[in-house]
Length: 126
Image 1 (cartoon, rainbow, N blue to C red):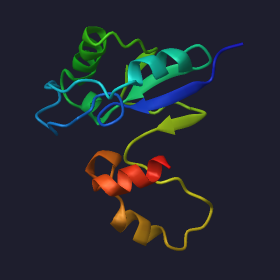
Image 2 (cartoon, rainbow, N blue to C red):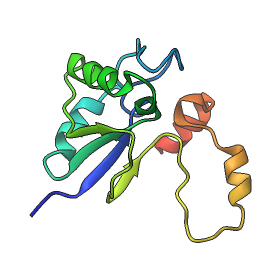
Image 3 (cartoon, rainbow, N blue to C red):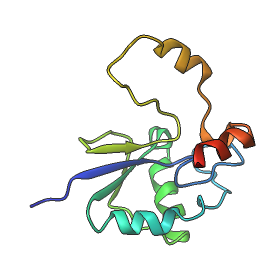
Image 4 (cartoon, helix red, strand yellow):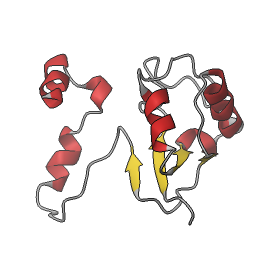
């Protein structure tokens, strides 16, 4: 039986993305600490696919693949198209809980993990 797919966003999830956007093929930042090992473990059970908006720019897919190789991170595919998946790991997502009430406020207040104030990040660890 084929493995189910887990989608990973690239920037801010695999690539630490501390330098922010410098172009589709420019990725000077290191991996998020521990992500290499976690992806390796997840791949024992799931197919891991990287989906990134970089893939819509010339050279983006190739640049991500090169960065992954240079950082010794193995995935099953890199694409701009979202395949069917059991779950998506993304730093810019809100989990929909079936209740549309308050969704606009959640969107307006949203901050990815690497932009939150330090105390908010620490609070979420507990």
